Image: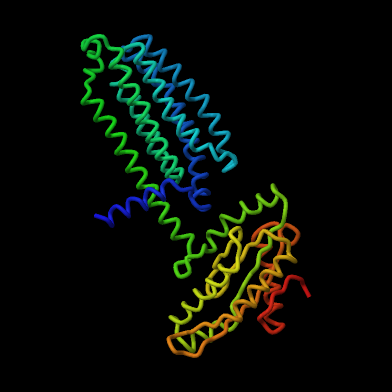
Length: 378
């Protein structure tokens, strides 16, 4: 029971936390997909009022439906324009999810003002809540799903209470077209909204875990190349917006193959974790360490090239002085690395150019005897 409670708390914390960069990037694409789908569905809504009139619906219902459809179409086009600028508006997923839910509520209110049972028993309109919640899964952000679900539950519950308060007699809640409005039936709908919100939230949580696995190195728990590709553009944008510098350090462990050959791959894995521990310890909270693969790492520093060289060289010296024991009682080994640095934007305007420049300098460090950091071409 305790383990179940801990697991539920872990899920809740994950859903309420800001997603990582990969999830945000995927969510931005999902927001655009939702915006396009919303525009298509909004256009389809324009067909419903004429069909309602042809099917014998009242003029009031038809006009309410038409007004609601026009309202939704105007905002659908607005959200589509904003969604085409990915991640510029961080509030956009919450605003659009809130709009989808609130638009459903407003149409139900309009129906209720015309005929009380229509405001609660119009199943087609009520399903707008379900669509609004389910579509949040495409945003890949648990906070948006819980927000939309909570908002739908609050708004619909308030509408139910208002309708029952306005009804002066039970007969006002009975309709030949919409059936009888009962507390039990409305309670079931609220519970269904809760269930859909929880199921959608769990889908988002599962997606987050899968994406996290794809963006995290399994051995060291560091971000991997996939994470770097998605994150780096945000760092470039921050440098352009805030000023300052960004330096990419490409780090490669010296003679690492010998550790695997002489002591086995288990010792090699422990050596990698030892190096990561030192690199993390010597790096600042605003610096990012990434494992590209094998014994190769990238360290991103928000510093100019010269200052970054001093820090990376200091880390190199600390690592060289920290003994590593490949196994209990074995003779300690002293690990070293070579590194090449490249600065943004002076030496490269994208990740591939920076990596090429840094790799060229890394090769120079190896040719000069290894265990050194090179920041300038020779």
